[in-house]
Image (cartoon, rainbow, N blue to C red):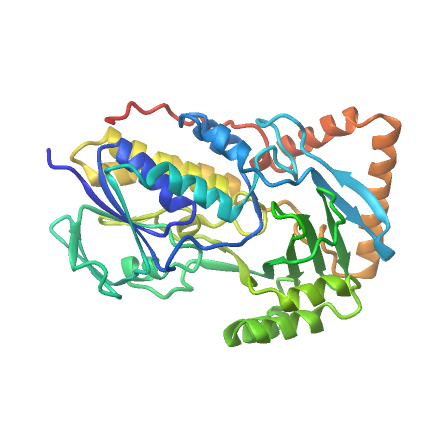
Amino acid sequence: MPQLRVLVVGASIAGPMAAYWLAKAGAEVTCIERFPSLRKGGQVVDIRHSAVTIVRKVPKLEEALVASGAPLQGLQMVGKANKPLVAIQPTGIPEEQFLISDFEIFRDDLATVLYDLTKDNPSVRYVFGETVSAMRQEKEKVIVDFANGLLPQSRYDLVVAADGATSRTRALGFNCNVRDGIDPYNAWAAYCTIDKDLLNGSNMGEFSVSTPGRGIMLGPDHVKGANRVILMGNNPRDMPERLLPYQEAAKKGDNAMKTYLVDFFKGHGRDEILAAVAESDSLYATECVQVKFPRLFNGNFVLVGDAGYSPGPIGTGTTLAITGAYVLAGEINNHPGDMAAALQAYSDRMQPIIKDMQKIPAGFPSVMTPETDWGLWLRDTLLYVISYVMVVYQLKPVAQFFRWIAGVYCIAWARDSYGIPDYEWKA
């Protein structure tokens, strides 16, 4: 049987992970990325339950992730005047996690680990600075044209879109608009690295909140003297007009976004963070959305990761990307010569996982960044009570309580219960 030729679009997390497993399934993989190199920056992402199971199937990957892990020991929630409220730390059990994962790693470091895992594989080729300009399907092949001339027009047995929630490749593969299938959450986040250590050498992050729906998270960086910052705005879903100023700033570029951020956070405090953000050259802002596309594949074109099922604000995107990449390649491996059956099996296996990991708990994310002063007072009071209980009971009962909450209230943060199969790979 001829070797499958697969094009993967996107080289962040889902793309390289898909390339690794597709090569194990015997495919010849070309992975393209629109940026000229691996994109730097981004905040901490976490690896949970089913993704932990899959990571442990790759020799030495868990060790590489631990070695590259973010230097984040936990997150200190702070109230008015930066008063500490409660510190949230990992449970210490990778299979049972809550807000802070036992596998915390910066997005760019994870992308680098996965790229390094695959770049020397003779069945995987990376091409940076290239995008798809057009594609059409003909006799179970996908004919692809490229925008920048780094690759000639080529025929593939499968094209995998792994280029994010606003995937342009998805729009080409389904002949739709980029925003089709996107469920906006009326929220945004901006990320950057600042050249100041405002944590004074601490590896405990800080999260400050003010109304309406504003939050700033400050965390340590690998580089001494630097911090990583997340700035976020959450708006009621019935008030889309509140998102318009952000969207206008996003269209105009970094300088407009920096001006918007200073104005948006007026009165929040932490002006020293905003001043450092204004000097940063790594600012990246994105609207918070879920992707709920009606189908995961169209002929020999398929979606993986955020392009197919971005979970939005609940922190399961990396886990879904790793899980989806593994299952896609595994089902192709299990259905040799029948791509239609393989893609249907991938879709059938992933749909219940996607549904579960896209569940947004009641009150989330507004419980983290309340809209009103009363809501903020209630949140801070609850955090103070939790802090008191943690001191009195020496952490253990509270850690058990958090794990119970993770399992009952939001199972997508808890133990792997999805029955991820063991595939017998060709390579």
